[in-house]
Image (cartoon, rainbow, N blue to C red):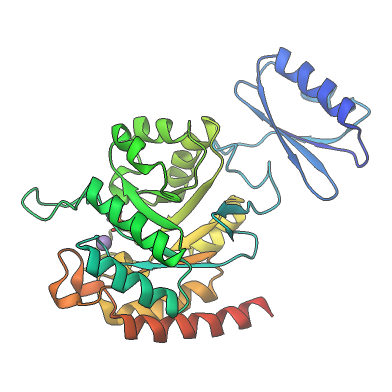
Length: 334
Ligand code: PEP
Ligand code: MN
């Protein structure tokens, strides 16, 4: 249920109303916009007398909403959420370009890729340290050493870093990581999501291989319900009957999510296609569709990459794509 308050209500009046609502067993999420304050009533709202609430002097309107996601819902929070990542912002018209290798492989590799993607306009460095691989015999990542190398690249380039977590027990290793990624395979690892809800750090939540947008939003809700509202959603392709591409990029997810939620939305055309030559057209399409960020895998020697080489761009290819993305953004922002 949401209650839109009349313009010009005082803080005291809002506090009194929230206390009264909380006494009736619901949590209240307050969203203060430029003109209106919207209260999101979370939990069991069946005992709330809708008519009584609507009749209150300071209440403009009350609506029951059927979507099960409350914190992530744009109806509760009409304005875009802007998330701070180091000195950068993402969401609400702030676009960030994330680039780097699938996996951190060596000091030389991550530093070389970091310097080159930064020079081409990337603003956030990615690199997997803990890798979710289909086969247990494949390279599993450099783990804690990989995070150390990312931190070294961060110190050298000044770029914030993003890397994937697979186990909540590893959280202490992520202390200086700027954005924690939850990979597609862990989108519904609810215990992990609950732990990430307890920290104060941006989380990039990838859509699962076969998950609906509602399920993605419900997973975001797990993190937000714990108190961490810094969730960035990521469309990375879903599994369909098509086999020419690794996944099928659901680009309509961008405008759809924009309607459903106030959270920033990032697109990953690398995992969505699995093919380096398809990354550029899909990245440009994502920018045109209104994504708040794009994440691209870049490797200094894709042919020798320990993970996801076929979908990785060379630094030169990335430079070309980054330049074209900037041009698309100019048009989109007009
Ligand atoms: C990744 O970003 O390297 C990754 C494993 O992505 P996904 O979870 O989308 O497969
Ligand atoms: Mn990858």
